[in-house]
Length: 408
Image 1 (cartoon, rainbow, N blue to C red):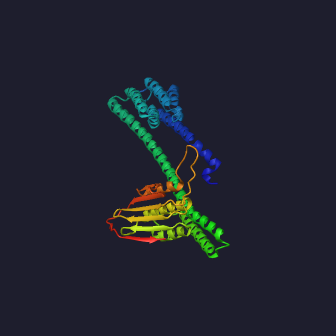
Image 2 (tube, rainbow, N blue to C red):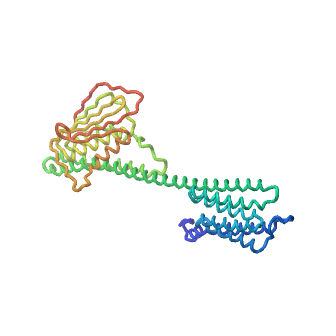
Image 3 (tube, helix red, strand yellow):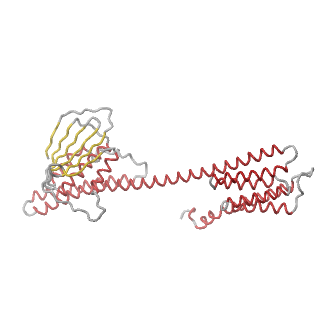
């Protein structure tokens, strides 16, 4: 258990503010009484000190213990008894400090409209007390108490505003931390979905094929099982990379930073081969002059293609699919469409809360991060089409019309 969490420490910290207020009030009372007792008055400017003077100082200072709980009430009490003290003609300076303390407390805890009125009332009482000043210094005394009142009010009001800004900053930091946690959860869920859904779909198809031909076509079954093993190993490798990032205690790398083995359009051949082995023939068309994409955009494009092909495996395993990648001067466009052969109707969610699949949601989230757009829906000639467009920040680009077609 940490020392700060020990029950005794917690109790001490809870009572410290109250102890501080008691010490402040008692100390102020003692100092004022000592000053009143020892202040010389050879010319009889003030009323002789007696028990009533000390009693008035007590009712002025001791209630300051409660000044933070009831700031306005304590200020009214202090001003009332200070006015009585001044009216009776006792040495006025020793009572002014209590009123200044009460005013500062109101200004630091109450709205400005309340504290401004409190400052005006406190100034009136203090100006009434300046009539007791020594002859010849009354104007100076009036100027002094006016400046002192303004300073107390400004200092208290500044403390209130600083406390409000600190509270607002803390709330903003908490909200930022909450949003960061939510965004990280979404990112992890999206990555897990992209990795698991694709590889498990391939594994499921290949496992079914292997079981079906195991007794009649051993080479095909062996090839299907090899594909199952490759997909499982790749899924584990990608999940292991993700876990390594999550376990890092140092600064997190930027979203775009990744090594050469992390998914990107450079690994499109591997993806197409794996999908082809799952029974879905895929054609790839690349137009424009290929160039290195920023890693984050590269991963985004790859994941969209991966998710679209995963959906073909699950919902249209017999369809012929085309993947199109176009490198423009300032954008990259990716499209995946199938001809709809063998399409299995997707189940319609029941109830009013029907939502798009997690894969489509993940596509839109990825594209939004890089200011891109994703469209997905039935194609005009049948089948289903997914299209991604992402702007690419480049100083220049070449939009040649060269086309190279590969069939898988």
